[in-house]
Length: 153
Ligand SMILES: [Zn+2]
Image 1 (cartoon, rainbow, N blue to C red):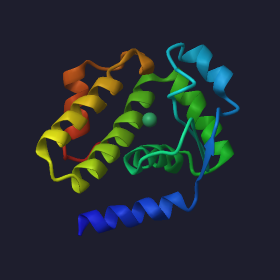
Image 2 (image 1 turned 90 degrees about the vertical axis):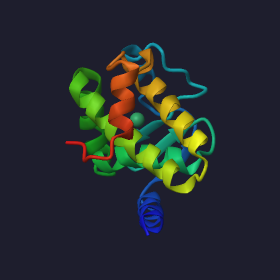
Image 3 (image 1 turned 120 degrees about the vertical axis):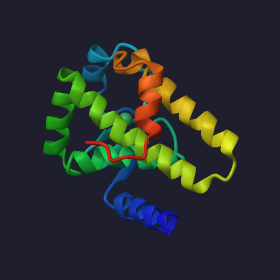
Image 4 (image 1 turned 180 degrees about the horizontal axis):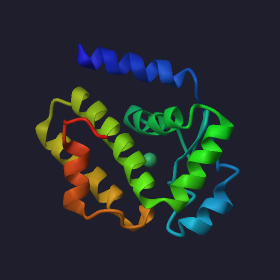
């Protein structure tokens, strides 16, 4: 049941959002704040748009749609969100934990292979603890926060 519920949530959120293949208008600005972003791999959510270098697997949709939702699916909401995201490390970490948890849960509910789930959790924790986000947490902390099933915030 959870699986169906989450899949429906995903589709409902997807309807509000357009995937644009290419760089977002804020790319140069974002690059100043995040020197490690790579235009060939980085995905940006901006209100009711997701900018990505290519089509996305559903678990990445699940992640980015959390950001879109938190941005109120609007340009003004996205602007506020991004301004805070670059300036406030706690905010940035919280927003990413919310998104990574959703991504992990989404993957976990669809995959029957425990090894794959284990590796996926480690992959996500690696990302969240990487310099890309400004070394917000160590690997173990990030891993605990992503895979913990207790509510976040
Ligand atoms: Zn994110």
